[in-house]
Image 1: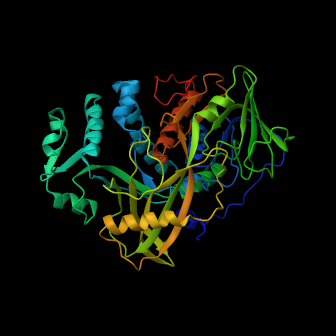
Image 2: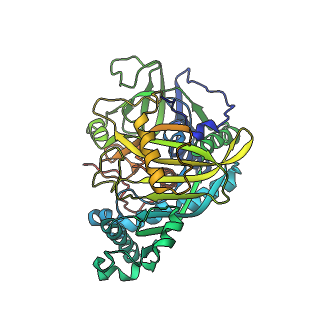
Image 3: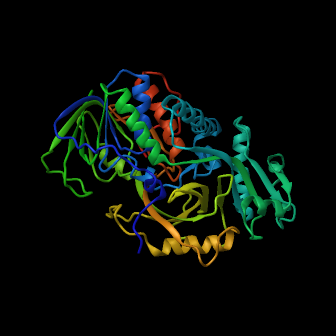
Length: 474
């Protein structure tokens, strides 16, 4: 079996020394989690306010989900937009969609302010469909976008689709007719199964490298107001009316150690949780009703598996999602996150001093079992690479065939909420606690939007109600 190694961490070339917290500390704001959510949240707070900010991570910055993702920049929800609108209404659903799409501008702003060196690729992406149900589901999402005043995503349907006449007439203004050959060309597939596709903006980057660049920038630019401590795991977060005390216990396993005497503590006015590793600590609310039970009941983990191989460099990066007709993909299907799918990201990659094309593919996943704790050091599970290989050979016409060698395989823990929606905002039972977590399969852009919303909350800027707001009862 292969080690868990992503191309993003392979490219990291980190030189910064890891510092472990070795004393009790006071700070205005504590950020828990050193992924893209935590790092961009810390950055926006330092940029927009005068508060002191401390960031802690139980392991290393950028080495969690941000170092084990697909590297895609995309703004869709895995949960169908029409389903979200059925629960929250069209206005709130579309407001949330606009908010996530605003992250493109915030990412541009951060790139310019910090002068990021990590490449950020932007391009047209595609999603291929094989069944009538998939076509109608995405057309229903487009209808919500249309009714909510958001530009629709371009939908192309093959002129020889056998169920074309079964598409409801109410959707007629939401798609265009094209040839199946055009669809196959855009999807880079030789399979005749694909009958429709979406066309919309996507991108690709290395979020682990962005995290590291931002940390180095903050340490230099805000040296008097910013600290970062790694291998510093929170064990208990004790909330009072206007403050919090976070207890750190070293050399503990992933379980909460309730009776342990903390090695060090961090006193803060606010605590912002930005972590997918949500099982390793407890929340104690001394100023009201229990939060810990609700928090852990509304979150669960999924382990995603990806593989990548190197090929000759193609000029244009691309990201394509596929909803295949037949799939051996592992993992559960559910109504919250929609149908399962495979996804490919193709982008440049330096290998032994030579620029090549990196083709990364994901899709296989499994739910973290009750009582199971994710271990980043576990080896890759062979079935996942076998699933990826079988899918590529059937659906991606540029796949090299039998001789392909997957130089990278990796897995990561994704945080899912029971609603399929990210949590961004203050905990209503104690507003000392704030969330920017729950990637629900699509994390980078929602994380960046979340950082701007949290900055505004901290500044006292009134926020409109949102589907991302934490609820009292889930």
